[in-house]
Image (cartoon, rainbow, N blue to C red; front, side):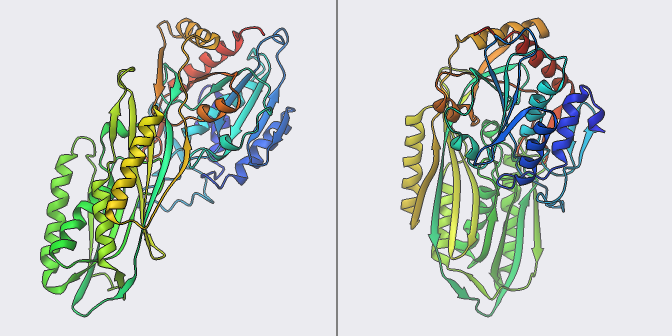
Length: 485
C-alpha cells in the first residue's frame, strides 16, 4: 500500500489526495479536505474566493527570525484515461499501486502532478522534526486548465519572502524560469445534410499514442492523434466521396492528444477501398513514429449504423486541411540554454458539435515576441482555411530566470550536502504558476523543485519512490537553512 511507503508522512498525505476526485474545475471535495486538514492540525487556515487554500504554520523555536517561505503546489489533476478504462474522475478514487520503484495508476493519470508536491508541503508542517521559519502552504485551484487560482491570487494575501514551488518533475534540477503561454481556438461553422442512399458507415479510432505533457514532452516529437486522424481523412474526403459524421480528438489543452476518433459515411462502391486506404495510411504513419509511439493502434468498426445526417463537406474539408497545415511541435530551441525548448505549439483538441468544428491549440514560449509571432502565424493559417471565428485567450508571460538570488544559493549548497554532487540550474518549457504569481509579488525570490515524475498528463504517469524520499530530505535541509530576515 502506498501509504506505507517511506517517508510515511509524505505518502500518507499523497494517498489521501488520490482518494479524493479532483479533476480541474471540479475541486470542491479537495478544497474541503485541505481546509479541514489545516484546521484539524491546528493551523491558521483560509480559503479565498476562487478556492485557493492557505495554511499558515508558525516557526519552530529558534527559527522565528528566518525569512517567510511559501510552499506552493496545485490541487487539481489532469483527468486522462485509456479507452478501456471505466474510471469516473468525478466520483472514483485513483487506483494507485506500487510497480517496482514507481507508484503509478490503473489506466489513468496518477495525479502526482501535483499531488506529490502538495503532500510534501503538508508533511513539512505536519512533521514536528522539521526545522523551519514561518511557512505558508499555498495550494492553488485549477492550474491545469488555465491557472485560474494563480491568476486570481490577490496581492498582499501572502506574507512570505520566498516561494518554493513543488511542481517540477525532475529530481536534481532547480528550475528558475518557465515559458509563457497563449491559447488559440478556431471555429468553422457548418450545416448538416441528410445522408443520401447508397452510403455505408464505419468508425476508426487512433489510440495507444504516448501523448504526454505538451510542455515537457513536446520535444520528444511524439505523434499527435488529431493530425494522424486528419492525415487519414484527407484523401478519403478528396478522392472517395467520404463524408464525416463526427471528429473527436484530444481532451486537454496541455496534453498531447493520444487518441482521436472519426465516424464517416462511405459510398457503397468505395467501401472496401476506403477500409484498405485507412489501414495503409495508418501503417505508413505508424512506421514513421515507431520509436516515439511503439504502441500506436488503429481500430476500425465496420458497418456501424448509418447516421441520418453528416457534416457539410466544404467546411469539414477546410478544417481537416487546417489541422494538417498547423504546426504541433517544437518551433524553436533555446539559443541560451542547451536542450531547452523555447517556443512550441500543441494542437490539442478537435470537436465537431453544435454546428461548429472547433480546433484548440496551446502555444508556449519563453520569449513573448516569439509567442506573438506564432500566434500571428496561427491566425493566418486559420484565416486562409476559412475559419469564421478565431480567438486568443489565457495569455501570460514567462518567468525570467534570476541566477544570483540567496534562495538559489541555499538550494544549491544544500543539494550538494545531501546528494554529494552539484545541482543543475535550468528553466522549463512547461507553464509554472511562478510566472503569474511573481508578477503579483515582484519581491519574491522563487525556485521550483520536485521529485522525478514520468509521463505526466497521460495514463502512464508515474512517480519515483526513492526520488520522493531524497526530495523530502532535501526539502527539510533547505527549510532549515533559509536565511534570516
